[in-house]
Image (cartoon, rainbow, N blue to C red; front, side, top):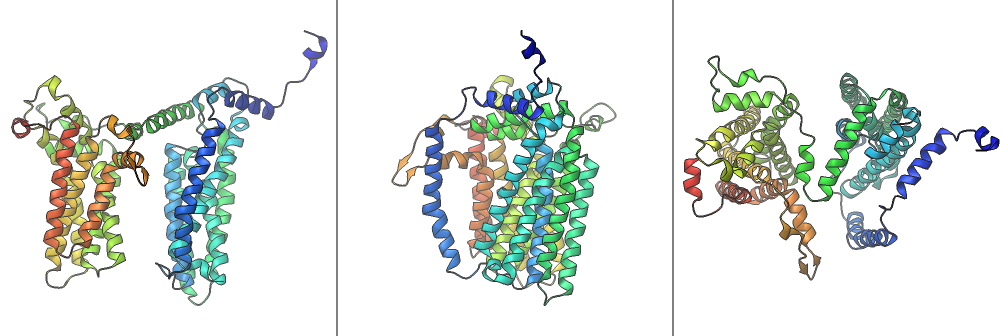
Amino acid sequence: MTTRSAAAPLPGTRARVQAVRHRYARRGGRSPARSHTYTLYLVSLFGVFYLVPIVHAASTSPALVPVGSPPAATAVGCALTVVVCWGAQLAGGFWGPLVLQPFLLHVYMSTDMAPTSYLGAVTRRRLACAGTAVLVPVCAAVYLVTDLFDHLETALPGLAAAVGLGALASVAWLWGQVRALTDNLVLAAGAGIAALTVAAVSRADPDGGGGLWLLAGVLAAAAGVLGRVAFRSIRTVGLPRLARESARAFEALAYAWTGTLHHALDLYRPEPRGLTSALFRPDGRLRGHLAQGAARALRTRGRAAGAVVSLPAGGALAVLGATGPEGDPALLACLTGAVCVYLGSGWVGETWRGLRDELTLAPLLGEWWGGVFARTLAWPTVAVTAGTALGGGLVLLARWPLAAGQPVEAFLLVTGLVALVLGARFLREMKTQLPLGLLLPIVTPFGDLSGLLLVAWQFDGIVTVVTGAAVMDSLPSAPGAAALALGTAGCCVVMGLRRVGWAHRGLFSRLRRA
């Protein structure tokens, strides 16, 4: 070693970080230029054959949802702001912008560099991408659905509010990862209070158009203040916790790329905690089926709280759609209510996975279990039915008196919806490994449809619920809609049993013994 090389100064922190990233990017695992060209080709085809006709149709036809007035547009923007902010915070708690490749993070953590030196640049780049990813879909949806951008006096403030919404969403994404739970609750409450305040101020001046400008200014100010605080919190982030989050995130990404999306989602299920003794009576025996299900649901308090909110909300929306005037609002209420009930049916307890495991291991453990279906399905069925009935009943009482026959029709539609949701949830939770037949090409005049079948298999539960609810709403007879929902639920149950190997001639005898 020469004196000159020994006296040479060490490279700066930024150069060291870039050197590690470039070495890792040239490890041989990058996609070739041919792959990027094919992706660009697919995007171009999608834009020419789908986006251009949709944009042309939206520009030459009346708006599906007219804005009406600037205060109404401000109220919708405030509601959208709250939803996007809360969603970004929740996403940051599971997969935030600080998540790196586990190997890269391990290399950086093994050096003397501060966390801000190798997390700051990637965080800024990801926040810029996240803000753009929120801005573009919001502007596209507003342009295609509403007439906000048709007039100059509402287009400019609407665009400014959309830019502010994108900035706030990216900052809230970082905030949800680097700040504590209490700080996230404070931000969520502050977002709700600020949205209500801006909407109230806009309502006070119905003829003025300053509500959207006020909303844009509040969003920009909030994004600036919260972004400054969130970036300062990067230096205090727990590196061991970040390493665990990164390992889990990229394991879930590997599952998702290989087709087993439900396995990826299982990695983010909260671990049950506490209330173990509540499963047993004082004499040591297990409690009843409903008591066990309720105790197991309370062991994951976050999911239980989500079920408590979503099930009554779904029942209320379903009844609103069933008893309201026919049209797009009624259809939207029914679809939203069905999705809420479907989500709540999964959050209400963890017994679905236990049933799948017991049915899958039936040849190994035997089939004389003494009521496995009653033991595992009693609590979800009762909880989903009771929660949906509670929300629907409150709506019926609030809108009483109704026209003749409407309460009966609402009861039939909600009953069919609950059966449809339970059947779709059973079909989804009985999913095991990706069937090999879905990977085979299906050549048609419209191209290869194997990708559509793969997507349908990944999201079969939500696809069944949304399609079934839309068909139920289109039928003129409530008994016919309920019968269709019951038939669809029965088909889902049979298909779910086929997935776990319970579909053969002795099925009914096995169900009777089980």
